[in-house]
Image (cartoon, rainbow, N blue to C red; front, side, top):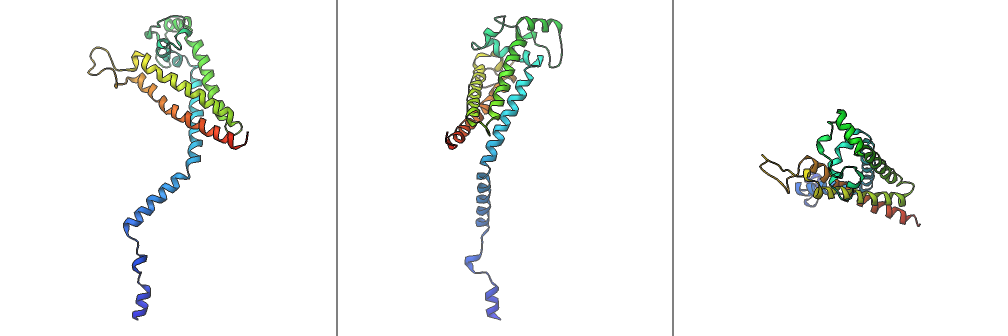
Length: 211
């Protein structure tokens, strides 16, 4: 009887403490996370392609073309694309709206022509990155160009006054208080990081294939 009891009783070495169980669960979580790295890269690349093609396609919409005027007009890298040296930002129509006078002003300013061209470039970058499974070397170049684009966009934080809270009646102003345009711009830091990672990944795959 005593012998049977001893056989059924767990030995001290087999008793698992709650702390050990918790540690095992945490380790299992991290092991599962490690196995998601390739899936994560695929989702990151897919996200870049979707965002670039979507945003690039929207550049054909008048409201989107008018919305980028303050950024491009104040940038020494892009202001020469417009006919007027200092576009008046009140010429922007509300999203989906149409004011004939504002529209005609933007036509004369080449607002729409510039936006259409920019949209084609952005969509093209998305398509280059989408070629990763077939031509990783081309995708790496596409990601590199997105890095340059993201850096250009982030430079608007310096050149665009509307990026920061300012004006009469405001209790805060300037750095680090981003206004709505600035909040839109700062998100490109995420795109910058994504482009760096996808460029490195595409280059690694290209070299592994023995080219």
